[in-house]
Each structure stands twice: as structure tokens, then as C-alpha cells.
Amino acid sequence: MIFERIKQEIMADPMNESYTKMEIPPLFKASAEARIAIVGQAPGQKAEATRLFWNDLSGDRLREWMGVSREMFYSTNRIAHLPMDFYYPGKAKTGDAPPRKGFAEKWHPLLLREMPNIETIILIGNYAQKYYLDKRREKSLTETVRNFHKYLPEYFPLVHPSPLNLGWLKQNPWFEKDVLPVLREIVIRNL
Image 1: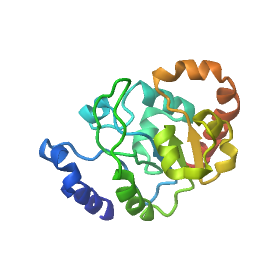
Image 2: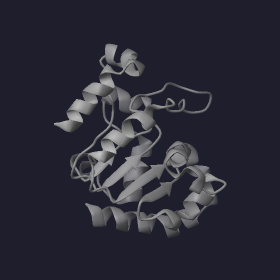
Image 3: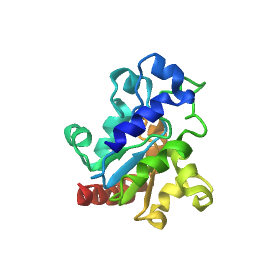
Image 4: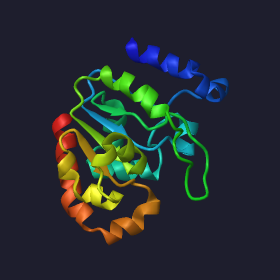
């Protein structure tokens, strides 16, 4: 299968040698049947330890936002998971370190080419939005998310569902009222 071959290539890549030596597989999910791709920052420490992407409080909130159960989120082949880096990048001063440069540029095009049915790529946070939207982004993440309609149907920008963003969510009540119903509609339509 093509995705298994790409996984083996990722593991054999010298930039991932330290992870492969520790028997840490790249954490992503790709399927020819996928209609939605979720692009986030990188797996967190718990996700890497359990070998299950979005396996934390952020994942719980993301599934709630999408209107899907945990079981559906992990079992369906209609949702692909392509973080900007497929390995946990370590800790930074606040939160996790950024994804490694060049990782998504090298592997995302190969994987997306094998997923021709993708309708919408959900872009979670600054790293994903910067890479995929580039100069089309607004001046801030907040404004990019507020203007999500501009990027549909190809992209759907979101703020990160991290518990660290509770303050942002309280300051921006329009997100829950205006953005999440559209997100749920797109997800349900593509499952």
C-alpha cells in the first residue's frame, strides 16, 4: 500500500533517525477515502506516548467542535490527520516546541497527492495556517479564523483547541456562535 511505503520512507529519512532508533513511528493517518484532513502543529507528549494523535484535552475539545465522537474520529477513513510534524518536537518555554522546518514541505504533498477526495483541510493554529494560506492569511490568527468563509471550501482555519486558549475563546464569543456550526456542517457532510 502506498501509505505504508511513505511511512517507511519517513522513518528512513535521516531527519527522523533519532525517533526511528527509539522505535517511535510517525504519527499521522492517511487514506484514499479521506474527505477531510486535519492539519495541526505536531503530536503532543501524551499523543506520542500512546501512539494516538489528538489523545489529550485538545483532542477532546476538537472532537466536540467537529461534532464527532471519539470512536468516529479514530475509526473513520474519511478523516486524515497530517500534523505539520509527525513527531513530538519537545518542550518550549510555553507549551510545545514548534514543528521542525521542512517536514510538512517534504511529506504533505506526497500524502495529499494520494488522497484525491479531500474536500476541506482544517488548519489548526498558526503553523498550519502560515504554511497552507501563506500570504492569503489575515494580519492575525483571530482575523484569519473570523474570516474563515474566505478560504472555504478548500481550507477551514481554526484556533488551536488547547486549554491554554480558554481566554481567547471567552474573548471571542463569535467563534462558537458563527464558526463552529459551519465546521460541524462540513464535517457531517463529509463523513
